Amino acid sequence: MLKIRDRKANALNGTQFSASISDTSINLKHRENIIYKAIRKGNVPAFYRQLVLIKDTLKITGVTNTINYYVLPDYLAVGTDSNYFYCPMTPALAQRVANKLKCSLLTRKMVNDVYRDAAIKLSPLPIPPTSAMTTVAVFEKHNQMLIHQKDSLGTNYIPGMLTAGNKKDVIISNRIYNDTSAYHIVIYGWHKKNGKAIQPLYARHIGSWADYSHGIRLSQRKICVNGKKTSIKKVLRSEYFNVLLSDEGVIKKPFYPTD
Image (cartoon, helix red, strand yellow):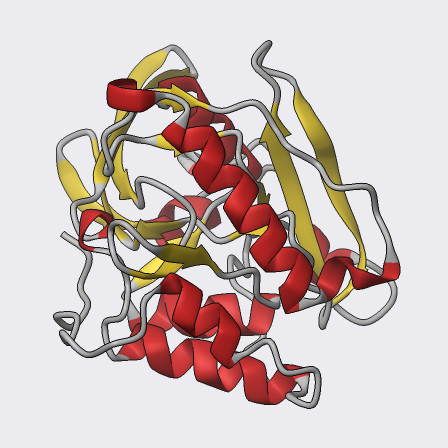
């Protein structure tokens, strides 16, 4: 289960929340503080609280190893089960939220494994890029497109089913710190129905970038390898076990700066 407070009955629903941060006079820092406070207070849909198990088995030097970890069923949103708002956010905020919820962002390999196991594979719905793609108005436009897409599935979609294909992932990667300039937001994913990602691993946006296509999916930090409890950080830093979660080799800093 996601370690988060119960949602208050009088908390804003998704439509109300997106309206509360849509004023163009609200700068990015203020907007992200509002988002963080909403999540910290538990204003997320009930169906996000039951996490979904991802399993994988790989041979390392001829030895079979099994890993189990739990992820959000969909990209992080604010609101109720019937009225919620996906919240694109900078990597600093995504990391603050992950820390608060005792979670981690995903690696590229984890994103691929989530898509592999997803019960609901949605076709990507891109909006032509403009200077407005980082505004709440476009966030809300895309939000409504995704809600309508889910509604079109009828009874084939039940809230809480593992869902993918609707957003790109903000991921942890060696590219966060290994690029020559200041740290970047690293994104990947948005898989098509054929399993190919529209967005290859990309790290050319500055750390303050957040556009409508970005989604935040979290995994609980505590995981299980070969039946023993460990953590995502330990596995990613392991010379032996890193391949269970990473296709980039060892990731010594599997997190973003939060300042």
